[in-house]
Every structure is written in C-alpha cells, then in structure tokens.
Image (cartoon, rainbow, N blue to C red):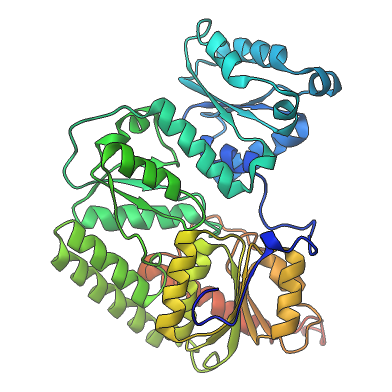
Length: 452
C-alpha cells in the first residue's frame, strides 16, 4: 500500500472482476509500434489477417510514410494455425527480396507461438538467402499488454542491432520510448524534448523508436546518457543500456515535463547534468513568463475551475504529471487517479508526488473501462481528465459535469501535432480544457431560426 493513499487497487489481483473492454491492446501491437519506428524497414506479421490490422494501426500511430516503410503478412489460415506456418513464413521472406529494404522485423502473433513455430530458426536459415537484416521478435499477444510489447521489441532490437562503441560522444543522449505516450500527437512532445536538449548543448544520437535509422541503432551505445520518455515502457531498455554500456539515465524519478513545476524541475535536472544550468534557468524563466502573459492577455478562466474535484484517467506517462498541473496550476483537487498501467518506477514517482502535494485520492492501477465507470460512480468528481471513453462513461452520472478530452483515444482530428511537454504544452492543455469547459454550455439543440 502506498503511503498517504486510502485505496490502491491492482486489477491483476481482482480475478472476480474482469472486463472485456481493456484500454490497452496486446503485446503484438506494442511490438509493431516499436518496429514501425525504424525508418525504411519492412515489418512482417507472422499472423492471421486479423492480427495484421494491429500492424496497420501501429503504422498510423508512428505517422509513417507508406512510400518508405513496408508492412507484410503471412496471412495464416486454418491449416497453418493447426499444423504450423514456418513454410509460409520462409516463402514470404523470400518474396520480400524484391522490396530492397535494409531490414525486416518478423513479429509472431499468438497462433504461431502456440503451435510452436520457431521464427528464430526460420530467420536464421533465410538470412543466407536474402540481402537484408532479419530480426525476429517473439511478441505474441498473450505475453502482456502493448507496453510489454514495446519492451520486448526494444530488447530484441538492441541485442540484434546495437554495436558496442567504447568511445562516447560528449554530451550525447539517447531517447527511449517516446511512442508509449497517450498524447494523441506525441510526436510534438518528442520534438520539444529534442529542441530543449539542443538549447542545452546536447546531441541526440538515437530515438528508440521514431523515424530511427539502422545506423542510429548501431551507434546508440556511443551515447553518454539516456532519457526515458514514458512511465509505461522503456525502463528495461534504459537499464540494459546502463548495465551493458555504462549509459547514465537522466531525469529518473522526476515527473515528465507537464506543468510549471515539472517543466522547471526537468530543465533544471538536465541543465545540471549537461553543464548548462544557466541556460536551463533562462529557458524556465522565459517560458513561465510567456505562459503567464498569454493567459492574462487571452483571459484564461482559472476561477471557474478552482477547488473543483477531479479524476485523472490516463496512462502513467501523462497521468502522473497531470496530478501536479491540476493541483498547483489549476487549483483543482484530484480525488481519483485511474491509470491504465503500472510499474515500480511509476508508482514510486506518483507516491512522491502525492506525499509532496498532500493528496489522498483513490487510486486504481491497470484500470479497464468497467472499473473506470464504477470508480467515477463511487467518487463522483466534478471534472475528469480523460479520453473520449470517459466522456461516454460519465454520461448519466450525477455530479460529473466536465470531461476534458486530453488522452488518446480522442474525438478530435488534429492535422498539426501539439505537444503537452514544455511551456507551449501548458498552453495547449489550458486551451483544450477551456474549450471543453465552455462546450458544456453550448446548446445541443436548435432553439431558434436564423433571420438570414
């Protein structure tokens, strides 16, 4: 039990309350997300066509260019699922010779792993017959959630592709798991991090994974430091890089840079680690001044939100830093924290935040849609930070007046990526919150005829 918390529920132990409406997809999807982040490659799903749809969804999540990245499927049917599909896998790999790709990632779904297909053996045999790298990733959906799939894929990619560089590049950084993030335009968060590091004099040698080249994977061990950009996946990769190659992890134990305090703490920690403390202080001071002036000029309505009770239903990556933003920046009172996942690092950071803020909310780990609905019905917060799912889950619940849609899946189309990290990220969040707040008062029916 976490100190200072009245209720901490881990759904892994609640066998009597299972739901068929999880927030998270399976490990196969998370591995596809990760493999899809390697530019110009080919991702081969050793699966039935239904599982292949997860690869197509991962293609969109990474915003990949269909003219540069190939996705294939062995299209396993009844015979292969019963008797094995190794022959179909070898045939598909051989047919891919015409694609002229530098690497192929072979992902195995549940069916092939259940019947005992040895994709590693097939890939070893086919390497002699093709002119591209083949990396097998055993990531059947039953191995866990999509976040487990991200870790499985990162482990396979690092062990197969990373080359041990004895010499380190000064002030170099490797970024890990930016795609394990429920911000629907997480690419903007990644861009903010890269921009901030550049201002602090750091050189990003690799991003694992988003538009990552094979050469970046090969050079990742030349990094001096690493930063994990998620509390849902990527920590195992950082631990591996630290243990095997002496790469120091920065900002560990600090909430990701969402909100005034979190951004300042993050920049300060980076400034100290990169010998750029003065630059970090100037960035924080200028950013805070910009947000305050913009809110004052545009008339952000903080008063209407003050002291309202709120629930935060999100992944750990976004949900944990939102706690302080809601409490300090918006003067709200978090009464329910419902996270889609959990992990030792995430629980420790959240516990420290709650103790520091003197908050005592109800907590749910590994939540599902049913548990979220029930928790909202029990706590009845005035507001909810969540997704389109919570918008529907809160319908009909007395007392729940506002749902701020910030988390994926979201009922908004965004052509332009908008970050949540950093100071512009604060404004993006405030703008979304303000729009959802005023939307409640918009008439849902036509009550008059326009004169024109």
